[in-house]
Length: 224
Image (cartoon, rainbow, N blue to C red; front, side):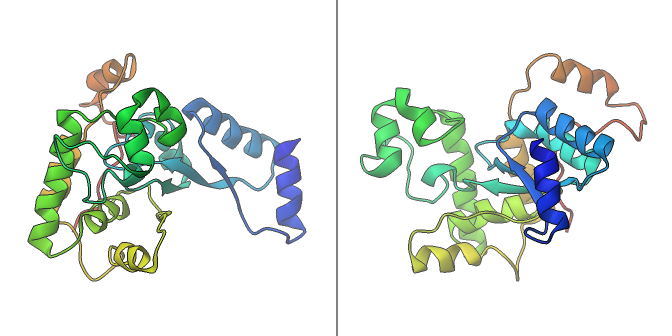
């Protein structure tokens, strides 16, 4: 019923395209199959939390997107400010949303879904981004957003700038420069998420097999 209603809106010209947000992999696949079965306008985008500190969607939902040609629109590209360059190892923030979570991690789901604690891995990623930003003469936020723009499933990035200065800085990630293959690979490895069973097993036993219908283990980076 919902999908037919959305299809009606497209057909009468009220909206151009249909997208979904915050779904599990099986839900995304079911939506795609239902659209095909009913011969109605398909879903063309998935809006999902995605950043160097939030990559779990690569294992299921984004694999469906890759197979179906659905574009991903990441939200919270700076992970609630963790990738803004303002948060340092050993110093928990005391103000704003991050400050609330830092002092009371039980509130994490409300403040930042899929929260990653203030642990060593988190700051290893942050500091790697800082080093790359310094090398390019860019901000930490620009590098974090640029990494997303060079992922093969990403169509565009949803930013959450609160000021004109933040907007101008975020837009600086868009063009005129890029991360090298080596930099992308370095960030990919540092931020690699642990995959639960059976995913890890399935991908490990199939990694040497040639099968055009079997997706890559993870989202890939766009080469230079």
